[in-house]
Image (cartoon, rainbow, N blue to C red; front, side, top):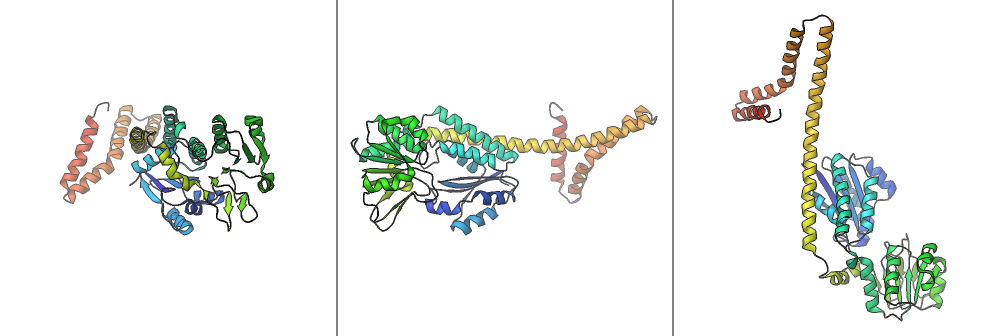
Length: 392
């Protein structure tokens, strides 16, 4: 039986629109968690994943995803599931290598989920590995921000007029890179402006998102870069917007730019994947990275197997201790009632042996009586090895 299961849907399997259909809202996740003892859901713009203890039934989740998105997740078991989560926390399974946000998303998913002993080992080990991996390897050169900045600069010289919509790490990181390379005609639009003003001051033009559509009517930009968190489009490109640049990049999920009835090409995350892979070609030592992941995955599986074994041993010891405590209580009662100490100790010893060995001996007898002599001998030899093992 599997110890760990992972149900995986990512950008590698399906387009982002299909992934969006598979997302469960917070209230839906809360209802799902009620049906499981050990489940952790990881949902981002590029992936929908569920991690389960091997004892859990994954079929209800598979049915939910099939009904919502019309597709079935990949089902990974044990080493394969562990390896996948390590690739995720290291940023190696992201659409763009070295993505920083995914590690925080894994931490939040772990905190919100329902853990078992096995899932705690898996997630705490994977999070620690992701943190250490990023400290060992500088992935900034192949980060999405570095690539996107390079892509913009490859298509627009420093004199071009650039509009960046958003105030998150991607938007601010792109503006930092552009400024560093001598681009000065930059406008930023966002809901909150304090952080932008604090970081960039007068080096960029800053405006509130409420003023954006009016600004687009009077100003023509050579590039739009949209990287903002939104539940619905904030720019609807139609006949009412004439000043549309040749380069429009929207990396928001869901999309923030909606095109209606006009021949405008908007580059989205999926469109940038191929140029990104060309950009990082030769800059990533994937062989070394994968060796690290494989070694850690094997180590985690050993930890889980050892933990399973420890749990079995603890169960046996609890059973033995319960019998022992009962015998001790009976012996103390007998001594308090004036019984001979030697007789009490001998009786307690006989009772302990009988209670501890009864089921074991009955199994040996049953095997022998049914003709399975070799099975009976295996049980006998196992007992002999336990008794003769060092330290017992």
